[in-house]
Length: 109
Image (cartoon, rainbow, N blue to C red; front, side, top):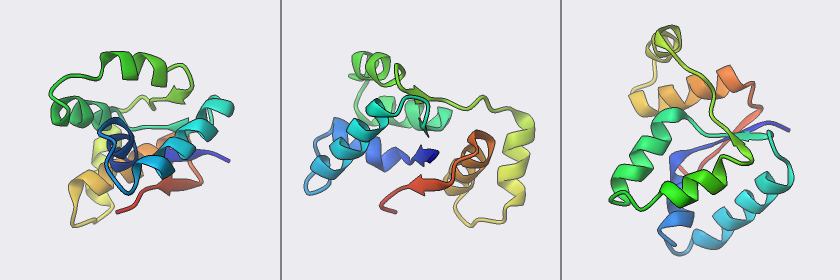
C-alpha cells in the first residue's frame, strides 16, 4: 500500500496535538516499518517548519529515512490547478499523491 500523509498528520505528531497525537504516531510507526510506502508533499515540510517556528530539522532528518518526498515541478502545479479543488493546498496534496502513486491520502481533514 502506498500512502501520502497530509500535513495535519505530521503536525499532530510534532506538536503533540490532542487527541490526534497517538493516532499520528501509530501511522508514523507503520510508515517506519514499511520504508518507501509513505510520502509527504514538499510544501507540507515547509508548512510544518513554519508552524513549528523552525524546530523540525531533527524530525525531518529522521522522517526522511523512511518517508518519500515526490519530486514536483511546474507541470505538477498545473495539474493541481486543473483538478478544480476550491482549496489549492488540498489540490497540491492530491497532485503529490498522484505523482507518488499513492492509493490513499491519510488525513483528518
